Image (tube, rainbow over all chains, first blue to last red; front, side):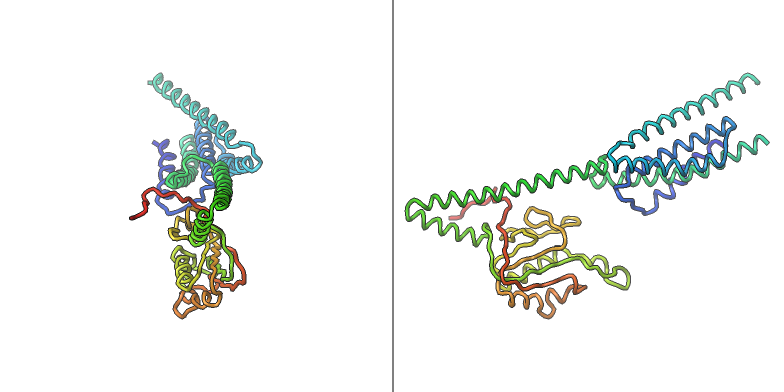
Length: 119
Length: 241
C-alpha cells in the first residue's frame, strides 16, 4: 500500500493550503499553474526513477525545486520579451508527464505479469 | 534491503508531494479568485491590452462629443442670424445651456484636492477604511460648496450638473458616467473666501477628515470648469403641462 503515500501527501498539502486565507495577485496566476505542472512532472519523474531503481535524492529534490521555479521564471521572461515560452513549457512538461505515466503503467503491468507467472 | 530502499524513495516522493499539493491548491485558488472577479481565462497581458483599447476608444468618443457640441452651438448661432425672434430665442437658449452646465465656464473660486492618507494605518493608528477618500467625502465637499454659493463645480474635469451621480464603484468613484481615481480635484467657481470658510467651518468637512493632509484647499483668481460631456438623452422625461 506504500504507493498510496504520495497521493495522501498531495491531498494533505492541498488541504492545508486550500483552507488557508491567502491571496495571490492575479498577475501571478498563470505562472503558478505552470509551477504546479512542473511539480507534477518532477513527482512522476521521481516515481518512475524509483520504480526503475534509479532514484537519487539530490536529483529528485533539486529537480523539484529548480524546475518549478525555472518554469515560472522562464514563462515570465517570455512574457516580458514577447515570446510565448508559457506554451513551450506546457507542451514539454505535459509531454513528460504523459511519458512518465506510461512508463509507470508499463512497470506495474510487467510486475503483475511476473507475479502471475510465479504463482 | 530492497524493501528499505523502496520505502525510502516513496517517503521522499511523499514529502515533495505535500509541496505539490500546496502548489496546486494555491494556483487553483488564484484561478477561482480570478474567475469570481469575472476575469475568466484571460492572461494578464491580454487584459492590459483590452483595457488600453477600451480607454483609447473612450477618449476618442469624448473628443467626438466635444466636437459635436461645438458644432451644435455653431448651428444655433447660424439660426440666430435669421430673424430677431430667433436671435432672442438663441440668447435664451445659450443662457440656459450655460446655467445647466452644458458650456465651459471660468471665474474665481477654489480648488479642493482630496487624496488618500499617506500616514501609517492599522491598529493604534488611522483605520485603513478611514485613510481612503470615499464617495461620501466627495459629495460632502460638493454639497458644502453648493450651499456656500458655488455656481459651477467639476470633479476631475467632470462637470457636476443636476443629475450627476457621485458613487463608489470598487476602487474608483463614478462621476457622471466616468470612473475617476484619486487624487480628486474639485474645482468650484464662486466667492473664494466664502467657499473656503464653508469647508473650514468648525465640525465641518475639513474637521472631520481623519488626517488633515487628505484635504487641501486653494483659493484661485481664475479657474475653468469644463462643460458637461455626458449623454443628454432622456427616455422617460416628458414636459409637463
